[in-house]
Length: 299
Image 1: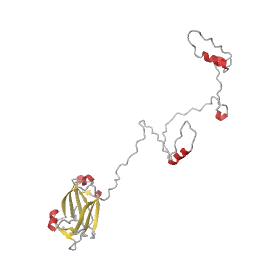
Image 2: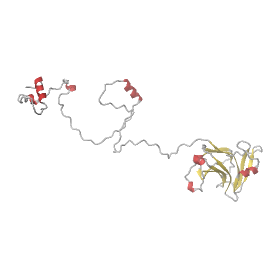
Image 3: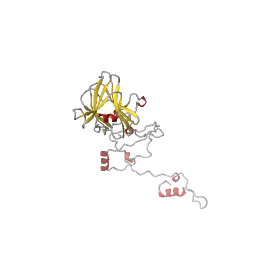
C-alpha cells in the first residue's frame, strides 16, 4: 500500500495523509540514522495524550486486494504499552487489528485477514468477517494509537512497508456442515439392503477358483464389514413333513420315481367305454386305455 519512498519531504507526507486529533507526522530517514524497514524512508508518528485519548493518520486507498490473505507491516514500537490500531475499510465496513507496542525492538507484523474484526463501535456488523468480495473494494486505511491503562502519556512509533501479501488461505471453519451420506431408507420405512463390495484379495481368489454353478449365487466377502439386514416379525414356519418318496441322497435309493397307477386300470374298475363315433370327444379315454396296454396299470 505504501513504502514511503515516493515522498520528498515532510510536507509531501502530510499532504498524502489525513491527521486525526493532534500528532506530528514526519519522514524517518535511514541516511540520518533513523530506523526504517526497507529502503530509505519510513513514517514517524509522535503523539501526546495530555488532552486526548487517541490520535492517528489515514489515507484513501481505492484498491482491489482480493487474492491476498494477509496484511503485513514493519513497525518500530516505543514500549509505551499503549494500543496500536490498524483500521481497514473494506466493503463499507471498518475492520481492525491490534499489533503490540509492548517492546522496543522492530519487527514485522503479519496479520491474516481472517483475524480482523469489525470496529467495537460498529455493533450492527459485530459478527461479520472479511471476505474476498470485501477486499475487492478497499477504500481507506488508518493507523491509530489509543491510550491504554498503564501506558505512557506520550511516545512515537515508526511504520514502514504497509502492504497486502498473498499469505495462506484459512482452513474451513469448524461450523461448516459436513457432507451427509445419501438416505438408504425406502419410502415404506424398511431399510434398503446394501451389498458390500468385495475386497481385492477375495476377488482374485474367486477368479482363480472354479466352483460348480449353483442356483443361488453366494454373496461376495465383505472384508470384515458386516451388512445390517432388515429384520421383520415373520410367521412361524410349519414343521417339514415326510418326503413323498425316499431321498436318493440320504438313503442311496434309485432316483427313478415309482410308476403311477391309474384308477381305471384296477381289477374292480370297469373297462373303458368304447370310443364314441359321434358326439363330443371324451378327454382321457385314449390316455387311460394306452396306459393299460403298455403295462403301467393292472388290468
